[in-house]
Image (cartoon, rainbow, N blue to C red; front, side):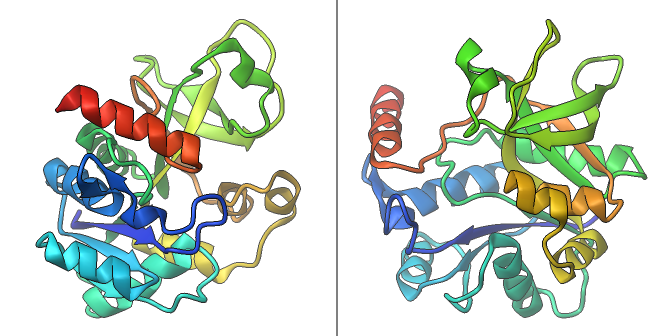
Length: 245
């Protein structure tokens, strides 16, 4: 395999406009995400930016960024646009899509995505789950749950479904983390397809892939990384950065 890590980011976030450049301990959030991806050392890393301000911040930090059309509708559209610029010869057969709002994501998460694709020939898309953070997660529609057929070691499993609905029973409930490793052909097939019925019902893109017949596997992380979607999340990230200083 020859992976590349791409980080989609745009300034026009609905709940927290300008969040890629939000200051966290003196470092723009997008630069923190970039550094975590670089630390994984799974392949070259670039930011697929929707705005020139993001490109400037990344390049000022010594990173690489590609300016993409700000009107692109999704992160997968953005990474494909960046991929066309960075790798028009199609040398990279695996694309890891790391969200630009996870400033403290563990590099091991990216390694685990790559490992699933390397280990399971049937795996078209790799992703990550973590144990539920609280009992209330089970009934929270904002917490996406993954239903997995687990491997014997309990460290990974094949995804059977993803849902916002409540899950019952004593078995672990896996919280889905929005990080993906795609085989390039699977990314192209996914992106070319129109939103599927289950995707529209649950408001979950990964169900489009499943309805296309693509196989998704998930690695189990110890805990969900901090994800910054709101001003409250940003303050939590800043507090965490202070504890790491």
